[in-house]
Every structure is written in C-alpha cells, then in structure tokens.
Length: 403
Image (cartoon, helix red, strand yellow):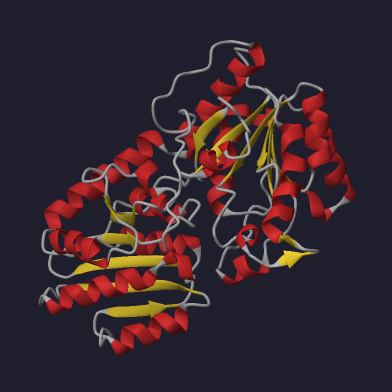
C-alpha cells in the first residue's frame, strides 16, 4: 500500500465548489482509485446564491440521484473502498452503511462543523410530551453516535469548536484532527491597486449571526473620526438584508456602503482580487466561513471575528490577517483605521495571507496529507505528525455563547 494510493471514496450531500476542489486534487493523485459521490442535486437556496452545479462531466463523480446504475456504483465503492470520507456521521443519511463498514473494520473519516450551535433546535425550550426538545434531540444523537465511536472512525474537525462539541458526548477520543473546506489557489491577476481609496468587502448570506451590523457600526465610527478614504461593498442576500439596508440609511452611510445581490463564486473571487480588505464579523455560530480562505487566497488583508470557526485557525493575528472580539465595532474600527491609509501595510498582510493559504491550506496540500494519513492508518504505522494545517491534532475550544 505504501507505494500505491488507497482506494478512496469521498461522499458529499450536495455539489459545492469549496468541497469539490479537494476532490479534484485527490483525483490527480489517486486516479481511478478515487471517486466522489454526490447524494442529492444542489439545494434550491444555494442555487439562489448562484452556486451552480458545474461538475456534470467529471470522470471521478458519481451523481447518485441520476440513475439506478449510479446508486449501485455508490454501493460498490462504499463496500470496496479502503477509506470513506463523508459528511458528519449525524448528517449523513446512510448510517447503516457506515455501521457496516465499521463492523468490517473499514476506515471511516467523517468531516463536519460544530454540532451544538445556539440556533440549532437542540437549544429550543419547547417541550415534546413533557420533555424539553434538547433532551429529545440529544438522546437521538447519542443513539446514532455511540455505536459509531470506534477506533477506525476518525473526525476531521472543521472549525475551532467542532472537536469541543464532540468531546461533550464522549466521541472520538484522540481521533480528532484539524480539517477545513479547501479552495483553489488564485488564478486571477491581482488587480488591487487602490493606493488612495481603500476597498472593503463583505460577501455571504445575510443572517443574524453573520453580524454584518458590526461592520456597519465600525464604518460609522470611522466616518465620525473623518476617516473617509474607503468604500464598502456588501454582496449577498438573506433575511437580514432589509434590516441592514435600513441601518445604512439611518446612519447616513449610503455614500460609503453599497449593497449588492448574490454573485457566482467565480465573481466573488474576482471582487476579492480587486479589494484591499475583507471583513468577516460572524460570531461563534459560524462553523467555518470559507470566504476567509478565498479572500486570503486572493491576497486581501482579512479582518475577522476571533469567534468565527475558520478565523483563529487560518489567521495569525497581525501577520496573515487580524482578529477582533465578537460584536466589538470599536476594535474593528481601530484595525481598519490602521489599514485604510496604509496601502503598503495592507498589501504586505495580503501577500502573507496568500502565501500562507497556498503553502498550508490548499486542496493539493490537504489531498497529499490525507493520503499519507490514511496509508499510515491502514498499515498500522505511526501517523504523520503535523503541527499545524490539515490533519494536525484538533484544537478543543469551548465556544463563546455570549451574543
């Protein structure tokens, strides 16, 4: 096995660009020893976000819903693969198959974000037959989880809190590893060259826990200090959009902040390549936040909330980006105040960010590591020791739930 890539099956629920870039890298190495399975067509809300399914002709892709032949091929690969990498065991709708693999001592690697989000139904206080729903839900999850808690089942933890959440129910002792969503390296000419007016960007779904209002309030602080050599673009849609638009108008910030509809992922990357600063103020409900990877890959100086899942993993504060406390518009404004007038400074941070993503967090790096990691497990050898990046030991950190 040491001289040959193992047979790997990578299972996703839906076709998403930030998951399939890893699939492309795995296929480059494994060739016909690799397949990706997509269980369902693209979600309608993701289609509304301009997430298009563009992988219809990929030779490594099995689209299960399209035919009985594809469904049977999935079953065959699931049974015969040396390694199956799949979306979190509690979200993956094929638990009996996972149990069968584990019963046959087959290697399973499940990847996923945090489990116990405050907005999750687990935290609701409604009662079902006299019992709080969180107790009902916990019992259901534990019923599914504990039978899968075996030595040949490892967690690829996405975000700073995923491992902590699993630890709370006694899962994956000493078998939790840092993982991510991986994005392709930039293929664009970096056309950021705004030596006068700095361009600040945010892009995503406008949800309450994305905390876009924190950025808007920081902009208000800057304008009150007569710092005005910037413009802000907010790209996206969602239930908070009208509220955010109203906030911009009430604070008389229309000359500085513009709201735009969703764009396709390729267009977002282009906007990043033309921006100086990317701000991500999401709180600890943000399991990851793949736009952080993308903005860093495009050479933006990223300023992110330290509670957002990806931020403390990808960003070394002051070197490859900046971190600020949750909901702290004043600290965010303070960081922006240093970046806005100093094009050379923000460019140096952006270059360091781009290099960091390419060297440590690219799909090619992740693919090489997971193959070496899998071979070591399959052959009973010592695991590779990574001190940072993909497959380094997962950080176990309790989330901040003070919103």
